[in-house]
Length: 160
Ligand code: FES
Image: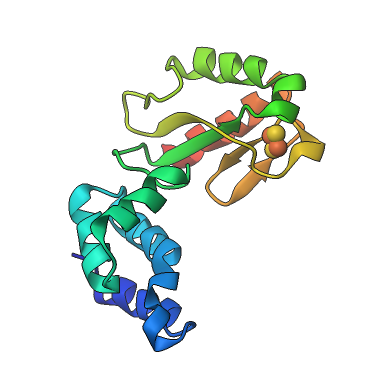
């Protein structure tokens, strides 16, 4: 299911915990699996459950709770716009509208070329610099229309 490299990485995560607590590596294992195969299908989640020896429902509970896990295929890059209270009060609705118009997609959709998926997420802990969004490992804060355009220009260039 996963490459030897990914399995080794998961084993290093498991080694951080006592032998009888290897299920503690569940979130890290899901992240590694998702990075490797793109999204967490039922098949992937079942593999994770078997590998960590936890009930499949436990894996599903975690995978469906956190917005960082994708249960369906997504684009090469995922734009996660926070729409929680601080971001909402500082213009996240306008951020979403601006990105939707620019990309020609709605929240939850992917651009026709499969390059970018737009999602809405709960608070990402960067409220002081709202409104904000996350792309990959980057937090992009204090968003304005011009700043969003500059970010999307760069994203489209690197996706090309
Ligand atoms: S409300 Fe958006 S980062 Fe906290």
